[in-house]
Length: 380
Ligand SMILES: *Cc1c(COP(=O)(O)O)cnc(C)c1O
Image 1 (cartoon, rainbow, N blue to C red):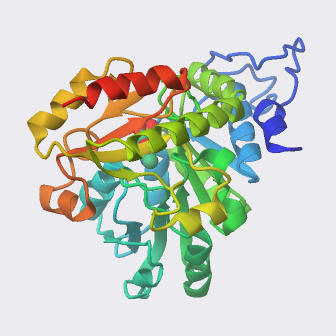
Image 2: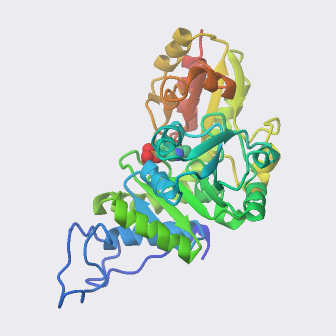
Image 3: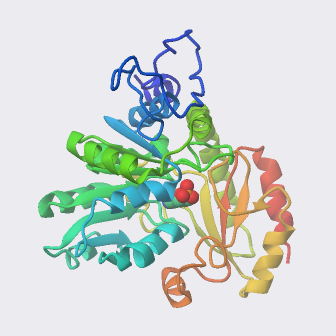
């Protein structure tokens, strides 16, 4: 089955009860049993729910994996991966990582004796110097948020293989439409389905997909034991979102390309960060591992301070000032004070997350309206 068919049919069965074409929302806690332990495959909805299960199968299918697990949020999915670790273990993580991932590693898991090294993985050789006998996990996010750096997943998989490490890839920005990390040698793919997979900014949900059965069993144990599962209604919403993932992504990419080019040619713009430009430092890797370049763009303007940057953002009308990304509607954000506020200022600036950096999640509206909105906002 091709990807554009899998988004609609992948891993799905017709409803066994009445043949409903769309997966019903099994809004139930529990399931009748003939005798203790004798049931139709489901006993209690934390351990398993048919709607969640349909979503988990769909997620596995589109990521080309064997096993999918859905969680209450993207961070709950990352948290489940962290729980594979033991005190004393070390993690090597992309330095320019999602702010919430940074916070989880540096607060919650630091307290449990897990050390996380944040490394510039644009040069995979940088990773090697941090590997020791305690290293267990490589956590890779590509494209990175918000600087849109690209990390070579195959090169990371080579290092993981050589040193016996788990390689997990946060595929939230790219989605499996653009990039399939399991095919490139990753062991775990993670998603904030809150973003492109759900696609309509109406649900918070997370996911993991793996190929190895033993790893799947360990993660299933954690999912059930810790209990951060998503509900049937939310599972349904993401399942519905997935069915249009490929058409939405195609438009996100087209609009993203047009807006990146518009910004690049604008006199009030300083830098545009978008991996589709041949001048992007990791463009060749992006071309190798992604099928297109997506609708996430960051840029700096010639307004150098926070106040002037805020004015530009506030002049946007179609681009709504909000956290999050990946919905049908266009959003604008200020990483330094929003998504990355939990990263210390010195670290932020070293990463390029300056006070005049603006991030766009380009939606699927008519691109001429989006460009007109930015044109107006950038008059200063
Ligand atoms: C939003 C996001 C997360 C966290 O997901 P939630 O669903 O908000 O918990 C993790 N990684 C990336 C790249 C994200 O954008």
